[in-house]
Amino acid sequence: MNGLHLRAPAKLNLWLRVVGRRSDGYHLLVTLFHAIDLCDELWVAEGHDGVQCTGSADAPHLAVPTDGGNLVVRALQLLCEHAGAAGFRAHLHKRIPHGGGLGGGSSDAAAALRLGNALLARPLAPAELHALAARLGADVPFFLAGGSQWGQGVGDQLSPALDVPHQHFVLVVPPFGCPTVDVYKNFAAQWHGGAPQASLGTLTVPQNWDAVVRMGFPNDLEAAACRVRPELAALRRTVAELGHPEVRMTGSGSTWFVAAQDAAAAARCRADLQPLERQGIRLLVAASAGPVAAPERRPWPASGLG
Image (cartoon, rainbow, N blue to C red; front, side):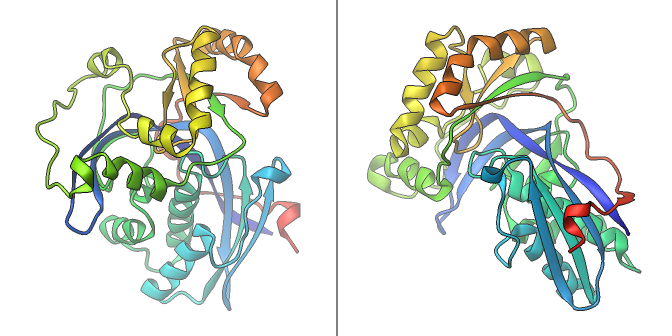
């Protein structure tokens, strides 16, 4: 059996600033999304009785439920409702740690939308697909295309970031996640006693990659994440003590990352940080992924034929 297949890349936020807060409590951001080659894989085929999903993973701790709470299932159900499809079968293979700010669930959802849409007799237009993606999560629209993009609003208003070169990274992944809602609540509590604001004031958005690098990949949510999970602050100090003080956080945590000049520098950084593995920290070397490829037909994985 064949199915349409896509790699669903993880992302890093190379720049994240909170610029305001709406009256409904949602925070307004300016962020630089950057896709990396750490990826999940998804197969989708036509079905006839709703959405069915199976799963597998590189390791047991990476596995996620494949019921109605999974974003792949929710994305395909939404596509059925919107486009009138009878159903889909899906198989998701996980490599991206969940709860770490790497966007794995959102990327899986975007891949499901693209694959399901490609199977429709009358595929939805890009604007319609973007609207469905935004209903599933603020950063799902980014993953429809991948690459490097500036996100504004809640992260769903996108524009290309054309000058970002190919990068290498070492990901420092704790054995725990950091709840996004708790991080934003903690961040909001620091705004003048928690009073909602329409704006945090003026913000200079960097116009080129050199400016982003000089700013050191800032992330306004780091301090809040460290207050929610104090272990994160201790981990950052240890990474700095091991020779890499430029470590930064992606999203609302819990993953830290160190940017490296090239693959050799990334390998040296990983070697420097190897003592962390004794604490259950995973060290993953990754590189820029570029835009998402077109779906292609591939044999259905044996683990998903059940």
